[in-house]
Picture 1 (spheres, rainbow, N blue to C red):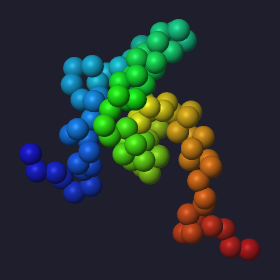
Picture 2 (cartoon, rainbow, N blue to C red; picture 1 turned 135 degrees about the vertical axis):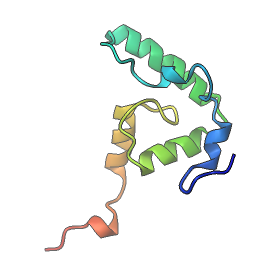
Picture 3 (cartoon, one colour; picture 1 turned 180 degrees about the horizontal axis):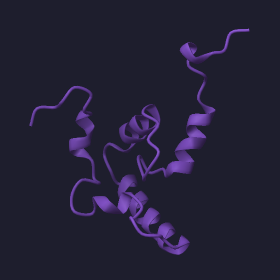
Picture 4 (spheres, rainbow, N blue to C red; picture 1 turned 90 degrees about the horizontal axis):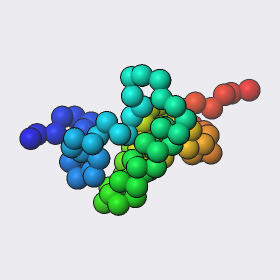
Length: 95
């Protein structure tokens, strides 16, 4: 397969590929808290055994991915990482 422009090559080596990929994203129906926590724990365990966990997290932070488990972190955990990043020079406000 030829990678499209912008497609990340690490994704081909990701442990989340395959029939269980849905566990990394919330279901289309309402999910009870315990169900969500169990799903996230299972997904994170797969991430922590993945050879590209760091690349995945870096990608999700870079593109500001808003949904799912990426690089072993959920949406809230990634938002905390993003909030700690220095402001981009192009986004600084001028006084």
